[in-house]
Image (tube, rainbow, N blue to C red; front, side, top):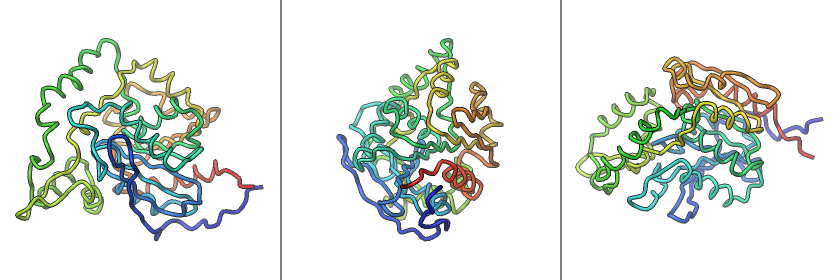
Length: 311
């Protein structure tokens, strides 16, 4: 018989804390909510984002978990990797290992968005058994396929474009373009299709004053071109469906309509035998920031379904 949890009240006022974790290349910034003695949940964002974008969702999740939102290298307030180097998915994956090892978690729940979902998959196959549950929030980056015929295009998209833009991508933050806050706000809102509140949240940790009333973005430019593995469709399906961890995949309708999963139809197929669940919600790729109330009920239900019984 399940043991009653200490609180079933949804999270509206959890204390938020922030600190840094040391890594081989510098500091990894994290934001934490909840009690560190509760089951851990690691949250990982997508490209050019920050931990703050999980705050709207965490406020609607059960309070009897310990939530840690990390910021990947060069994002938010995390240090970038050394100058000049490219950033690939397998490289930034080590940041997740660093955070999990820092807290000495034997296992943890993993909630991620976009690129973060791919990193979760790679972590799962590399360190099997460490992730106990997976929640994928519009996992578009995890289902990008590269048939052999498109390898030249893949190479040009990542490697050729990186070195063509090398000077810009490796330029110091001080050289970044400067904008009024209103212009930065307008750009972020339009590019990501966010609400006003979500836009303010998105800007919170990636914008800084640059003098004379202007602002600049602080993210590492290389974070725009994270090299994704060139997996052919059949291999991608075999890899993703081999992960035994109970998984909830929440897909945004606009991403579906835009063809984000056209080469990975299997993402829509629930498979209760391997505990793979799918939910579709109205909204775009960042629906978890703008409309977390559309996401939270599904996450709450999933967490309750696979709640570990305490003895």
